[in-house]
Length: 303
Image (cartoon, rainbow, N blue to C red; front, top):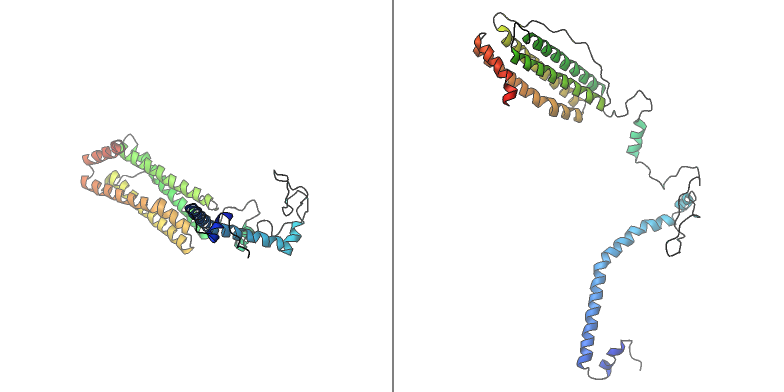
């Protein structure tokens, strides 16, 4: 009668009473088997993932359409590995193998990308960066540029007036010079944004401002500051109109630009100039205007 195929060292267990040595060896064998089984269980998900990952490649080789496309490649110059054995299923791309365009092998854009690709202009005079930027938004930006330059021009005239030797209010001259520069920077920022979105900057004419700001009842300081307050409110109203145009055209980027770069700063400017008007109304036209002017002159140095 033939014995079952078991390790030689466990044969004595079948014919006689096992000794302590055989029991110890049996325990070691069982422990080793359990260890190998546990290791196999741990590696099983990784092996399954590798098989699933490799399955599309095998199905690609079995696809008859792919086999036809492989003819566009040359398999004669495939390099061998370091051990000297080559792989017959590996194909290598060679120059000039076929002049026909590759389809299915190289990257093919999605349908959405193809539509956007068709929208890329080929004319050199048309902007390449323009996307979802309406003509109404472009015109509103140019109008706001003109507003900023006009306000800057008026502030520059105020600077020139208060810098006269017979007026000599250097604090007010400094304030309006800085205000003029700030409004010009706003216009330049809008010009940069217009170019960024693919629009065209079209500068318009600037109105000639007043050169005299003296008022019989209010005096020159209060009159100029009230005029500045009305200009800031006008600028804010124009910015809100620009924001409305952007919302009407569903231009989220333009609305964010106006909100983050202009509206908050404009509200702060209106609040600041309103306080200046209130202070000048209190001090009148006399000696208090000089103290107010000195406050403006040293305001930046104190900060």
